[in-house]
Length: 310
Image (tube, rainbow, N blue to C red; front, side):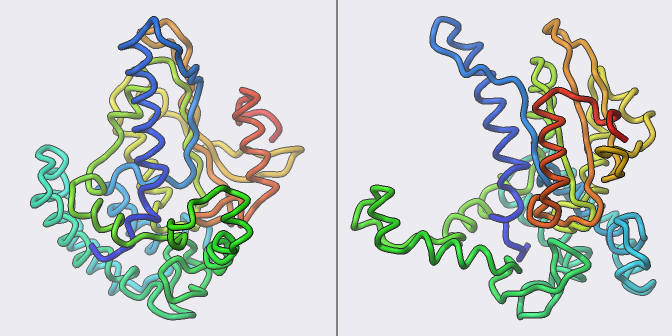
């Protein structure tokens, strides 16, 4: 797959994996100081590559993301639909047998059959398609599509910033994206497998979990994230699947939809699993909708239901 794995896997893989590691180490060493983890929340996470690839069709071929008309025409949608079964089959083999060779082959099939039809035209030049917001053009040639990363990189490479941060003089330059690291991950099965098991582990340990989505994102699309959330087998699954999408907002203003369940787990703690969306936002929710993003975080940190305030 020729997409940029750095941009995709940061939260959807790192946060669930780090959270699960914290919980497991707390249990393994009960007499040592613990990290008192209460909850995690992830924005537009790349949890399940299989489901993300499946979500490309809904994101590009329907108006569900909140667009007036589908991004793709019927011809492209038919091509993607015809190639999805093989992509799904091989991705499942990778999940069941996480060998780098198998997973890289599955990635290639999903890229050639499904993902390339949009991502192949994304990020190659200024004004091309933007996989992080299907309603906006890409503003750069580096695949990140936004001007801010380069500005942050320039700022962090200023000599006085290095000095203020205490960075060793022989460090070299800071780079927003390291392709060496990106391809090191790509050569393993890390970016090709699902971290749904880690999410499940956290929920069963009594850790609250929120996934929030900008609906205009394709790289880590809402359709795909909702699909793996529906397929996760745990005590809260029946209620989560059966629950309709409900609007949420603040002071009577509708911001997006949410699904939310609270269950008592084997650990004896009440655990919340929620997914919420922000309309009109892409991959970078706080960038596109800062006020709405703040309202979302405030609700979560203050343990308020998304049903309140609509």
